[in-house]
Picture 1 (cartoon, rainbow, N blue to C red):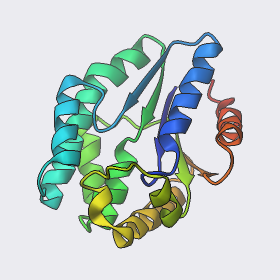
Picture 2 (tube, one colour; picture 1 turned 180 degrees about the vertical axis):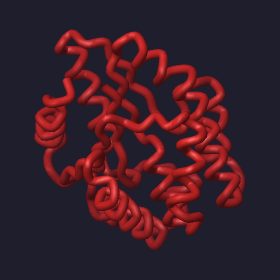
Picture 3 (cartoon, one colour; picture 1 turned 90 degrees about the horizontal axis):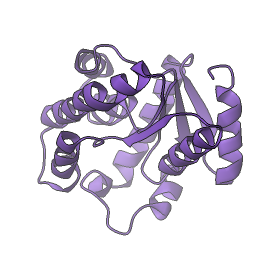
Picture 4 (cartoon, rainbow, N blue to C red; picture 1 turned 120 degrees about the vertical axis):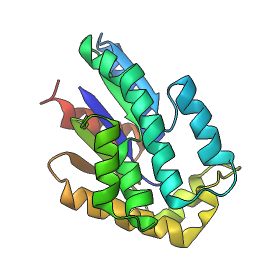
Length: 198
């Protein structure tokens, strides 16, 4: 199965991705845990530009995320799924829909089209959206904020609204979880939600 985690920075999505991968491995499953942008040498170079580089125009930003994603799908995700492994990814194309499509105003349909082309239409079996109020997430965040985190509270609120809209539109695939619960309780809810897939 292919499972992705989404949420604003500081929501706890990375922790949940790691906990799920650990849990599945403990059950004896072959698991690939990866992240976006990154997960490949090319993707890590793009990550450096996107998160620690200079200002990037919105469409350039969307295209760079899509490029890193295309490489990750080709080099890591599809081969893992082909051999029967589970893939757990910290962020995927819903991040681009939220950040570039909606919060940056590029249009969700246009950004979705770009990313479906980049990934040859590969969508996750399930996406977990870890929701916490953006103000709370900011307090939990890194000491050294990256280029996107430095956009400030108004941008974080836009991203949060965008994610909630994505969950509404793609409700068959996106499962909303309460990020204010204890991490181990969230992990238990997530594993329960995945029993029908595994």
